[in-house]
Image (cartoon, rainbow, N blue to C red; front, side, top):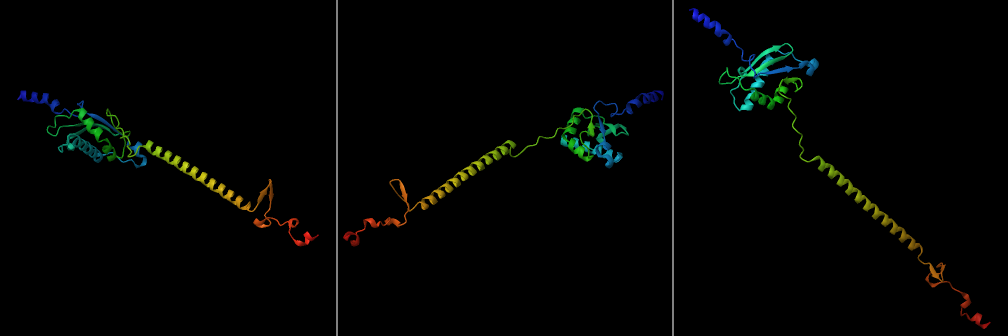
Length: 220
């Protein structure tokens, strides 16, 4: 009887050992709800903690492709009123066995955006201590920006060349029109010995009576 009592006394600390508090595979979480949402900040309570455990279980399912993770596998401890706590993940097959820290970190990093959106927070206001913030995926374009700029420049040059050609052709047409008008005005002017004579008599010239063959003048 005495041996049994002594055995219970020595085993009690081992049975009461908390795998969350005494584990090195846990992650500390800090939430800054008031900072992020201001007057729209919500109160952190048991329902919010349930949601957190659910999102971590979801992340573990996505990372392992196993549907055996539940909120019972997410243990939370050391929680404070300033909304900070520590959590660990246990194996679905053995509650006493903890999932390695590296595997939990990978699951959190792969699903950090989903976890953030569940609480309307960001990497800066929902912090997993020891897990660096996720980087945004680079923006990709179907058409490269430099190609768009090149096309715009080439289009502008082409429009300028067309405008220059049209302007040159228009000037040539106006010059030809003026030349044609001058030639019409000069029609009918006859030049003899460098002196311009007006075509008052048409194409027949000017009638000079001095050279007339009139008989009245010859008889004299």
